[in-house]
Image (cartoon, rainbow, N blue to C red; front, side, top):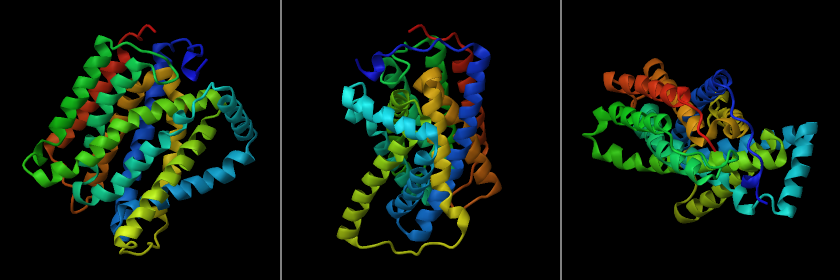
Length: 323
């Protein structure tokens, strides 16, 4: 029996579902902050992959200390080993961190040019499309979830919000081509959340699932960084002295832990839409309050952020899908 064959927890009442969505939305705001931090770190280092290695590596160091120190973390590691030995969890289900590593790398590679808002809406487009497919395929711990009218309407509204938000960039082909990288990262994000939820279910610990995510992601980034150094040499910049530029990893820990804990209740699509809302709103606020040379959100971007929130409410307030 695989992790996807386990019993599905009962569908949460609407009030508790909304509470979970609110928590996921706050975590999404954290992702927008992480994007700004890692983007700036990539600019300082003149190397987006090096910035991703620093971010993921620091997160991994924190988890390597934290997880073994907590009784729940130690139990989670033991349960994870047992699930792998029994076949309840497949080795490929541990690879969600590869998608997370790619997302963090694109933050450092593109945000300096695109700005946080455009980067975020590109991720949103990919995540909205893939979340429906992942839920329908039953990859996450909640099993198969059919595409209801409310969920489909929420996803469609989200995509429309993305198009509205980036409308002022449609005349810049260079920016749109660069936006393909976060678009691809968004496609992988739904799968990452689903398999991290399976690891959490198998280990009984969201922190253990987060440790696996960061270990796999760091390994993938180190390989990519080694290839980059061999081909074109080391980073052109230097490590900055400002402490806030090293907070991307800890913020990622919070986001991955929250997502791994909630996905079995909300499903991948609803979790994705809630985090999307947080990311879009957080990105717009950052670009307005702390603008950079690349960030200039106009009325269309603000309207797109508002429509994203409406899309999440449409999907969340609809009837829970029958499994």
